[in-house]
Image (cartoon, rainbow, N blue to C red):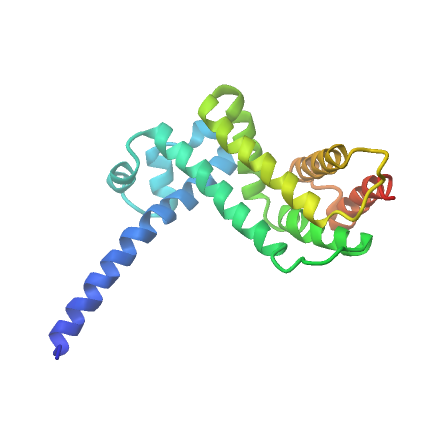
Length: 206
């Protein structure tokens, strides 16, 4: 049977293991904040370490160079947002009305854009980075495919005279455009974003 000192040692080891898992995530979350605020050129080991409240030595321990840190930060932003979006539609197992679709897409894409656009900015920067950095295109293609699947899942039946794939692509592009508009100008707000999206969707309903 373990005594008090054994228990303390076990807790210490468990804490260290937990810390080893959490530290990289802490650093990557900080890298996303730096990336969203200043773009790819702002992502340095020094800047990210300062944002994360850790030593530069720790960032270089987990990430071999700046390119590795940048790519892993983009991957992290992608995965965090993908998980959040998929959680939003996890219980969506029935055909939605137009109002339900607008409400759900607003929750998925616009609520966070208005309240805290940092990850949206990072994801837009990811697409710009993909124009200069081919390996990042793997992430942008996966992101586009994810958004396509999610929009297709929640969109009501559409006019059969227009291919469903085309409708989904148009709606997804409209969502991206509205998010970019709001992160840039912060003028539409939730009501304006939802209203613009509704106008597009209603044109394609059967």
